[in-house]
Image (tube, rainbow, N blue to C red; front, top):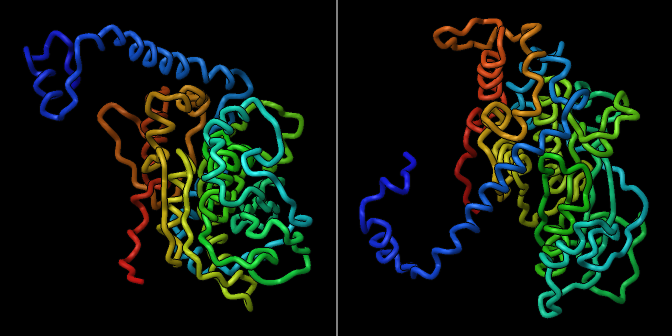
Length: 388
């Protein structure tokens, strides 16, 4: 339980600090206002962020979704689908292009100064100052459930140029990654909530990994985001939002299957359309991307490492608990028409809660149970122990 300042026993704080070797002098106390200001700032951001989702921009403004039962039943068979899926047919978009490390893919933005500060200007840490970039795409394994415009997975590949004097490979070259021989590690970056492009993950993660550590990166896109916004959204310029609960589940399910498809492409045999690489592969992401990378690592049959950052165990607390996202949900619309749920879904009804949501609190309870049942890392079995 949280302890108020007046409830702390005398000498308790000093004893704790001294025992850990971190005793603070009285001169540090005036800076207490700074920590308080940081806390109030975070609360202010949490309250103001949903303003971008007012009116037509609210999430779930069309309710639960007519295909919710179909999507939920599909999510129960992700493990089997991934194990039985074929290697995706990847198509490269154009030739390799060179870029200077630390420039965010050549696009200038207000975040570039922060990228340069994060990346640093220490030439001693830059082993490879020139990077190779190339985009590609393939059809999503969940294309049958995704809307037009979201069926194609776009990705960006980034490698360090090991020899600055060598000319860029041509698109017709075979072997390695798109014609570039590669024997180093590969990192697959999953998108976070609101990340609708490649530049953020390129500037903060892929470029430093390539130039400093010689790690290749594949940056994935996500359905309903960026280039993969549904064609029905044409003309809509606001932040990406989900019109139904089923869209949220289709997004998360497609990311997992698409990430597993990329892993099978990296490690699959060349004769079957894969790259045939035996290099170490790590799946990573921040927030939503971290959760999706962890879920992908659980279902893929290949040996991979996973580095999720700031990730939740599932979507339930993110959408239902008091948070930025929960304040963007049109809870009243979710109370108007009850969802169509599969027969396999067994709901627990707390005392005083009806099966059909009538008020926002009951809609929140139902949504939490749905997401905890179908969008939760604990639904997948842990990977079996593997020894190299």
